[in-house]
Amino acid sequence: MRNVHDNILSCVGDTPIVRVNRLASALQGTLYMKLEMLNPGGSVKDRIALQMVDDAEEAGALTPGATIVEGTSGNTGAGLAMVGAVRGYRSAFVMPDKQSEEKRAALRAYGARVVVTPTAVEPEDPRSYYSVSAKLGGEPQAWFANQYHNPSNPIAHYKSTGPELWEQMDGKIDAFVAGLGTGGTISGIGKYLKEKNPDIKIIGVDPVGSLYYDYFHTGQMTEPYTYVVEGIGEDFMPTTVDWQYIDDVVRVNDKECMQMTRRVVREEGVFCGGSCGGAVAGALKWMRLHGKEDMNIVVLMPDSGSRYLSKIFNDNWMRENGFMDPDYGLGSVRDLVRGRGERELISVPPDASVNEVVGIMKLHGISNLPVVSAEGQLTGVLTETALLERALRVGGGNTQVQELVLSNYTTVDADTEISVLADLFRRARVAFVVEGHKPTAIITKIDLIDYISQVTAAMGEGGK
Ligand code: PMP
Image (tube, rainbow, N blue to C red; front, top):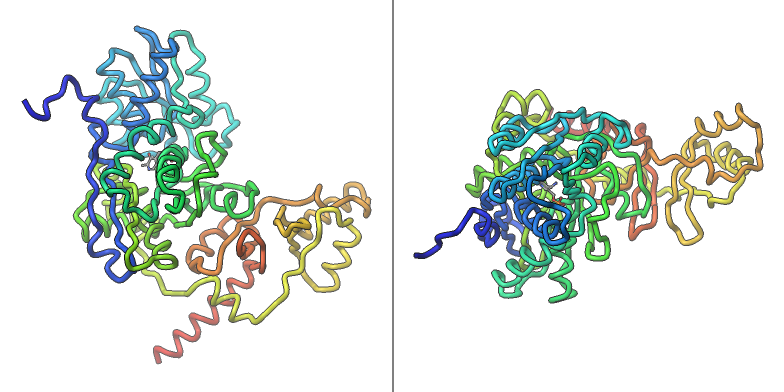
């Protein structure tokens, strides 16, 4: 007998790699996709589900008759429910309400219990999916898989996905690209590949609204906010991300993820989910900047399009969310900064006093000031409003400004598209252009409005 298995679990892994033919044809380098949606539970998460259960059984934490509990965006649930079905465990999952109905139905199909929680609440809120799942995990006979803090998550990829990828490519791989969710995939694969060849570049992809991009580029935790793409990005820092293996983080917005997902299906014939579109969009952005002719780049494709039929593959849903609107080619942050002419970035050190800052703001007629350490590191933003509140409360002009800094800023680089910047401004107050971890310019909403009106006016004239 050939390719006949004792049970479904030994079918996890050994997924194929397929070359991207059309989407990357104008770019230098060859892009390949590792098709993790072809795992039996439908996603990359089968690998960590199996590893987490194996390790918990071995440690005696998961015993016969127990219930597997997890707070999951769906795929880890499907993997765990599948492992539970084979090994005889019950399972219960907590899911945020933004996740698609297909994902919930898939979990119920394995006999699992599904509890739905609101998306738009803080992680500490007792209704949040983190809190509810931690509570269920504390119940007797329950084993909480805890993918965000379980070392078996990156270990699964270090032991299986990384070596597979290396062997499939005969070691001929220059860059690996993956979306960052728990960070388990990128950290485990990154560790393995770097041990084989430290020159391989490991690139994370993060959606607008998540905090990874700003954290990677400034070391600061900025304010996260909600976004639509499922499975990537985070509003807190899981311990499963290991930054030492990550060389760069690229950012994509919801619209780019959704549109690229559709293109991957139509142009490459690979039926994939939204985070795959995000990862491919991120990989193409990276290739545009760093691609070279003989480079091989592999992007990881976490799950299948079948879980998003009522969303990404539904024109009404796409239209309602503005994901079908055409892009006007507004250029990038570089164009905006160039267009307004050279300007020196005025900043203050963390130990400046409130009086000094007020003086600087008055002198230059500005209302947002970055706080930058002696090493050139951005530590936050000071705003007129924060200073006013402080003045009304205590009036102490000698307070150090570090105590008043806010984190509702975002960081961009010169290549960030204007459409992405506009998305970031839905929440962030100001954006800093960061080069090599150092801020070089500040962009406010009025700068953006000014730029867009100039560009669109020029387009109008061109069209006459
Ligand atoms: N895409 C999808 C669809 C996912 O479910 C996940 C897991 N949250 C990821 C990407 C990211 O993988 P990881 O958690 O290993 O970073």
